[in-house]
Every structure is written in structure tokens, then in C-alpha cells.
Image (cartoon, rainbow, N blue to C red; front, side, top):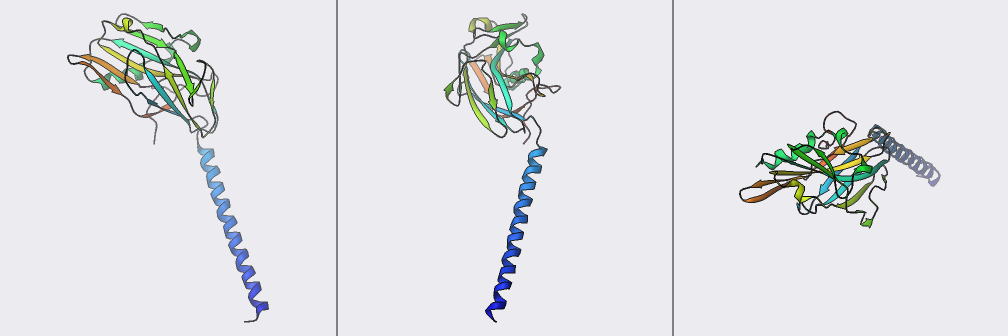
Length: 231
């Protein structure tokens, strides 16, 4: 076949493949944009690492993942301790006490100290604690300093607390619930209480349960403010 005929055919074939490649790339880009825009504006996920369930000096790592389209600002973190009776041998029942806390009844962030802020009555004692030490991505940070998590990004936040052991004397159960305060005015503004770990006094000493799940922070929603995150 003459060369003058073969070249135009090759050129046309290359143009067709180029157009197909552009169409495929365009479809991929549009699909990615469609998926991104279908994500909720606010979708903050959190899980916790608790290396040892020490009731006197709990050390908790908050693993925060922003799956929403918008940035989320965490104003602060804390820990809620619930002490009540009678002793419950099934620790999972204790941990579920975190789900029953009315987040609106908690002290605001600026009223919580490292020594604790007391709530409740003789039947059930509750104490809110601010962290003694706090770090973000292993960098020390002042407690209460806002932390912004851009869309699609994650951060690791480590906090250590000093709880009041004397205040829990006489109670059979001690439940610890991590707290997150978010920016006011957003759809997810307010405070969320999540499941953490529980300790119940038993005849054999102290047993404990540590929750290892990912939760979805939804303080503006009715019911639980920190349900298990959908997969």
C-alpha cells in the first residue's frame, strides 16, 4: 500500500484513540466530582486508642477523620467520667451509659478544668475533665485551641487526663466517655459524647472494656450524638 495512503489512516486512528482517552478521563473526573458533591457537608468520624484502661491517668488518642465536603473545627476535647451503682458485671452495659448522656446538660468547654467539673447527684456522679496534656500529630498544643480538619483529611490527637479517684469511692461502676466540642453555628455545632471504656468492681478485682469502633459525630442529631459510623 502506498505510504501516502497509510499515513492518513494512522493519523485518524491516533485521533480516535486520543478522543477516547479524553472522553474516559472526562467521565472519570465527572464521576469523582459527582461522588464528592454527594458527600454531606459535615461528616466527622472518630475512633479511639486507649492503650491501658487506667482510671487515674487515662491516655486517649482521638483519631479524627473528616469525610465531609467542608472543613470541621474541633474547639476542644475532654473526658466524662460516670460513677454509679449497683455494680454491673457486664461492662458493655456500662459503656452504653455514654449513649444516654444528654450532651446539652454538660458544662461548656470554658468551665471544664483539669481538676474536673461536677455534675449529677448521689445516685450517679458525673465529672468532666479537661486534658492535662494535649498534642496534635505529636506536637504539643494548648488545651482549648481550635483545631481545623480540612475536607478529606485526618489528624491524630492525644490527650492525657488526671481523674479524681477519691470522688468515685463507694461506686461500683466507672465509665469514661470521650467528649468533643465543635464550632458553634455550624450544622454540627455543639458537643458530642462517645463511648470510651468502662470499669466495674467485681469479686476478682477490676475488669474493663475498651470500645474499638469508629463513630460518627452528630451532636445536632436527635438521639445518640456519637453513633457507630456507617461503613
